[in-house]
Amino acid sequence: MQVTKTVKETRDIVKEWKREGLTVGLVPTMGFLHEGHASLIKRAREENDRVAVSVFVNPTQFGPNEDLEAYPRDFERDSALCEGIGADLIFHPEPEDMYDNPCAYVSIEKLSDNLCGKTRPVHFRGVCTVVSKLFNIVTPDRAYFGQKDAQQLAIIKKMVKDLNFDIEIIGCPIVREEDGLAKSSRNTYLNAEERKAALCLSRSVAKGQEIIKNGMKAEKLLGEMTEVINAEPLAKIDYVSVVDALTMEPVEKIDRPVLVAMAVYIGKTRLIDNFSWEPAEQ
Ligand code: AMP
Image (cartoon, rainbow, N blue to C red):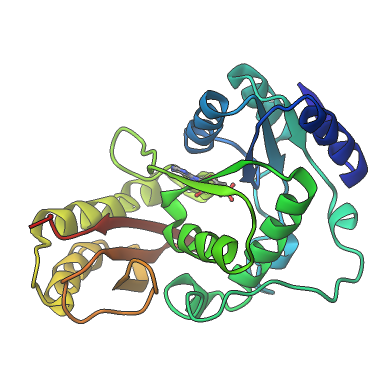
């Protein structure tokens, strides 16, 4: 496995792969890898001749009062995990290698307006910009993203379509801890009491999955899901919403493919979870 820091080294390696006619899968990450990331890298390993993983805590996707500095980092462990799965390359740039007084950004309108986009106004512009840069640097055939960040996945798919990136976007299922908590690098912020409290997210998701049905009012679904979270004293809801799976616009009635998503503060830690649902075919 090779580790690169600069854009040029990365491009040179990928160019050689392409010359040999090999296919390339890319897994973009912010590091501090866990089994959720591992599932993406494994899938990329199965479907491509070469697998590149990027490990980069991207400053442009963090707001001014967010956890950029505190975000956990452990490159040695990440590197061992990637090597164990059989990745061929880790691209691990410094912020200075990626950004030199930039004037160009990529933002995807409308789909970024709701859910996480509302509370984190610069977030998806930062994500779309860095992912576009990674696509241009690595030029993968396929790129892998988790459904854990369902709005991000929908936005990236729309970006690839609108901007004609010749890249297949593959969404992978949410990997959870045994007790249901969605795996996240941010789970390391939780103390023992908060870790228990954090289960209200997956419990609320399970409740939603149990009661959702065609024709139901969104208000009714959200009411019951919210109740599960509000029963937990350490939890503070940022949002719990039902949106159209493609446009990310709120729906009043459940009568089409939807994303049911939430962000909840457990103490100071903001956690997300979601499920997707679509009407059974008639
Ligand atoms: P991050 O390092 O948090 O930016 O995540 C990198 C990629 O891993 C994103 O596409 C995430 O959606 C995905 N990911 C993170 N956690 C999970 C999880 N628990 N299950 C599946 N994919 C995940």
